[in-house]
Image (cartoon, rainbow, N blue to C red; front, side):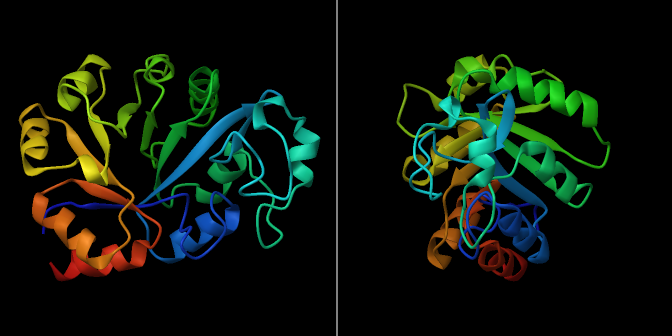
Length: 227
């Protein structure tokens, strides 16, 4: 069976509150070789949370980037979980799986580069990705880069290569066999988000993509192992 990455989306957020230590622990329990998380800058801290606005995933209000760290630490991110820092997630993961860090907002690339430089472990593989391609270009070149796209462009592959990225990350409704072939011919890895339905997981396997982001990593692992 070819290598097919099953990436726990925001941990295992189909089961636990997204982007929390509880969710990342669940992903580890399910045997994820990769997890994905999102980072924002707030009060000079790298905060693991998806939205810039606090209201969807916490009991707080306001914008992450405009909020004091002490206030962020006081919030409930689901089932009594706090919003973790990136350092706290790295402490939890240690060498147990690889990590896709998605950059959200200005300043995250430089801050993530600096943190990983301090903590770099040969046991961990990092993929740094972003919709913000300007931010992505500021990332330390020693790490793999993933260019994320949610809308069609003239050439997803050409745009990915122009960012010195080695991974094309694309929304599920944009993927096709021709894009997969074009990307592979350019030596790019192709990852697709967010795939949760068993039929859709099988479709991605059949298309030959290199991996998927999923809220239910155990479903994808089961199908992958039986393919």
